[in-house]
Structures are given as C-alpha cells and as structure tokens.
Length: 355
Image 1 (spheres, rainbow, N blue to C red):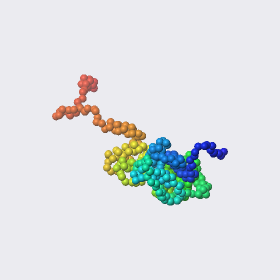
Image 2 (cartoon, one colour):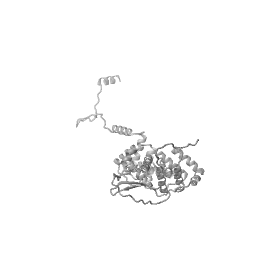
Image 3 (cartoon, one colour):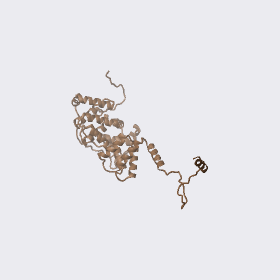
Image 4 (spheres, rainbow, N blue to C red):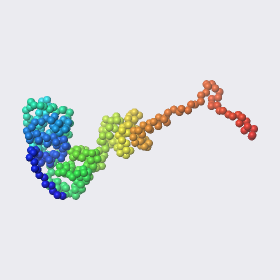
C-alpha cells in the first residue's frame, strides 16, 4: 500500500489538538463528546467566551447533550466545571491530561463567579457511570508486541476484528490485553465476551469492559458460566418474576423456566407475559409451573402470536357454550314421561298381514 503524504497549504488559523488526546481519549468518546471538546479548544485558543446555549446552537445538539458531554470530560479528568452556589455553570477550565495509570486527585482552584450570563446545570442531567474497581494499566509497546506475537492471542485478535468489522486500535489492544493480563480472562471467555456484546448491538469498548469486569466480579471463568449468568439475569427474567408477583432475586430454576420459554419454545415476551397474567388469575400457588403448563399447551397448539391466543380463546368459548337444541317438554303428572313417536299405522297393518 502506497503511504499517504499529509500536508497543509492554508492561511486559515488552526486549533492545536494534543496527540495524547487523539491516542488515549478520542477513540473512546462519541461524536458529540469529541465535537464539544474541539469546540472548547477553538474558543479557548481565540480567547472567546461561550455558553451551553451557544454550543447547542452551533453544534446542533440539545443542551442536555452538551451538559452530558461536559460532565463526561470532567469525569475523564481533562476539564473542570466551575459552578456557583446556585449550581450554575460559570466557567470551564481545560486541564493537563492525567496519566490513565496513575491515581492522582487534581485539585483545581475555581475562579470567582462571573457576573455574566450563567447557565444552570440541571440536576437531572445523566452522569457518566462510575469507574470500576479494577485499575487498567497503560501497557508499553513492548508489552503489546509480546501479547500480539503469542499464537493464541493472534488468533483471538483476528476473531475480535472479525466481530467488530474493523482493525483494532492501540487503545483497543490495551483493553484486550487488560482482559487477559489483569482480569485473567481466558481467550475463550474473551472471545465469547465480544460475541455476546456484538450480538446485543454493543461494540463500544467502554461497555464491553464493564461487562468483562462484571463477569470477573461474579466469578465467571468459562463461556458456559457466562451464558448461564447472562440469561439468569436477563431483563425478561426480572419482568416475568414481577408479573408473577415475585420481588426476590430469581433462582437458577426460575431463570431456567424463562430461558426455556424464550429460547427453546420460541415465545416472544408478550406471549410469555400473557401466560404469567393468566397464571396469577388462575392460582395463588405454583404460578411458575402453572404458566409453564399454559405455554406448553400453546406450543402444542402452534401458537405464535397473540392473535393465535385469541383464536384459541374463541374456540374454547364455543365448545363450552350451552347446546341450542331444545329438549322436549312434558306436562307435569303425565303418565308417559317420554317422547311420543309418530307411527304410520296403515303401513304397520299391511306389514303384519303380509306375515
């Protein structure tokens, strides 16, 4: 492949972006967060003032997204949001980049509250999730090179790139090596980790890292354990438990029932919850088993949608409806309490004479 020569021939003013930001922070941030940080560099370089409202108008984002991005960068430790006693934003200070492998509390003296236009930070603005209890080291290039040269690691990285449909960056390699070196996850478990996340539409490395740490904290060591753990605590399991009136953490047996309904029997969530609703109405005990009986009956009846359930209900009502055939009535006290028959006496007489 021919190398590309990159050059500039322009008299426009430029904004300088740190290589460290590009290498260590940009790949993990989303588009809005990157744009907002670049905009802050631009305004700082020109000595301009700004506000959340102006940033929202310029970048075409809602103000809550601007606040969320600012809080994200504050959490990363590369800027400080200065507020007054009324929790109103009065200043933004860009900070030196902290080393990601160092635990250093950065103390910043906040400037005096300005008398200019102030923007209130809503208390409902979502915060970035807190950092985990596992500290991710910054590995050297030699560490990463040795990791990549391992035969099993080389195969693993190829599989991960196949899942992600893109080459791995240096930051991506840092994270994968963190899974192997610090979290002590096997190659098979790392493989399943990426498969699990990608199948759920999650390719962000921050999300994948959180899942990995959650698995390690819960003693997950094999793909089989991860599968069991994942379906046990799937959202539908808790939804079913709530529908059945259970507020406790689901047991393995309870999670197994829901897994069977969803995976083996192939029912959608609305069908499962309908069975749970009928179970609650039908019994006070063994509701899970009652719902299981209903769903297996529906499976035998080839139920796929709620319309199929409604059709079964209609057929059942028709079978249970009282017969419309009117039975004969007799007068009270009548000697003959049976249905009278009509006979052709002429025909009977001829039949007797012929004998």
